[in-house]
Length: 115
Length: 110
Image (tube, rainbow over all chains, first blue to last red; front, side):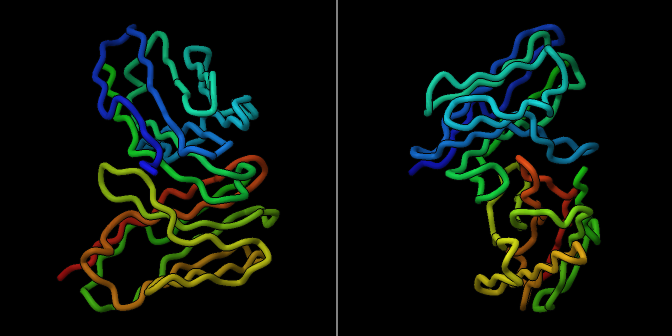
């Protein structure tokens, strides 16, 4: 398996633009997680899907952020409009069990810079 | 609210030294504790997972212990090598999520 695939790997955009990050989880995994990593706040869980259904989105910072999982092999995280404080590395991870109960496999991340 | 703390924040050791990284958590109601490694510009790689009913796990030169009652875990690295240089993150499975510590940046000097 190729592991968790994320695209793009790097994104530079201007404030106010829409940003869409994409993730393909490992085949057969039924849980998908979006994280954000910054120097100030470390690694934070944004949202967790189980069987394509959002279970916990309490980490989504505000309404500018939205996530979807239309099927078991694809998820998106959208920021609209983007702001400089959204600059971070965004990771997608997938797993085969209950959130927090089993190993999660991380993608390489998308480094987002909002100017 | 679960909080995870890692000490030290950074560590620099000469090659060959044995070392210990520490992790503490505030709520003992956990499913498991996991140690991850993160290389610069890369994602996280799972190293060891200890279930809440277990006391320790070993993989090669790595040994992780868990004392749930005291809210502590240690990651022991034997005979450290320059290739071990990375950030090591501790995470506890708690509630519906993994809660991560801030990490320990390890540098092993050759």
